[in-house]
Image (cartoon, rainbow, N blue to C red; front, side):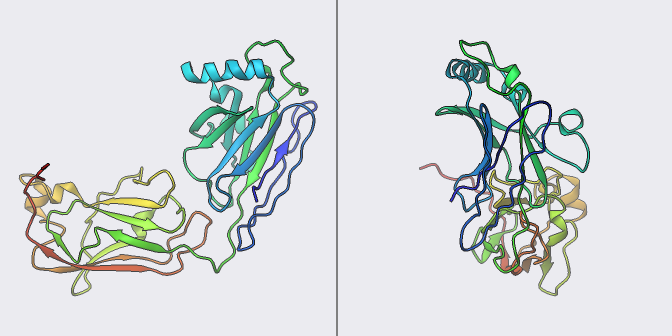
Length: 293
């Protein structure tokens, strides 16, 4: 089932439709509201993930064709359709920059795909401006003002739980100059403060001091299910001060355990179902370049 929500504007602002999507074993609940003219709706693709998009239908075909041409040559998307993550009573289109994503014309509709999955508990508003459509042969729409639609992804009920499927490389013996780990999750995760939940400990249980390259951007894939975790390159590359003064994060001949705390929250605001540990030994540095043949 595809969860959708739509809203229309007769004069000025009207309250958007709040859609609470229940992501359970029985699927997503669906509710839709429509009216004449332009329709703005939220939908999931596929329905069982956190990948939602916004779709605007009811646009005159001649104008929609010009929108397609404009998207290919200019950055007209946010001028027509802007999506905001609202913060309390702040007026979205005046104070908060619109979300980043991709725009395209698909079938008979204008579509916006957010760059990152939506966060649980946050209210999102999509605002379409019919009066900013390029000129055409027909009327822009039956609506004279902005058309808006509000969406909120609720917190998933406890019990389902996100898990860590694997940490790569998966081998039990890794080189001393290993540069990065990949942490693969079963569902989208939350961003921010990730290093509070990741620990590297030696065989005695002592935590290695600042082994990772901690950056604010965080290296997630677009689905927020795979995290790239870099070991500090300054403790790997020869001839630099961190390696000479502090030493390598991983030392040959020793064993370590990479631990992920279960308190880390996923994209729906729930903690992981369980923590994860990867114990491995460290061998000599691998400095041989790959042989393309």
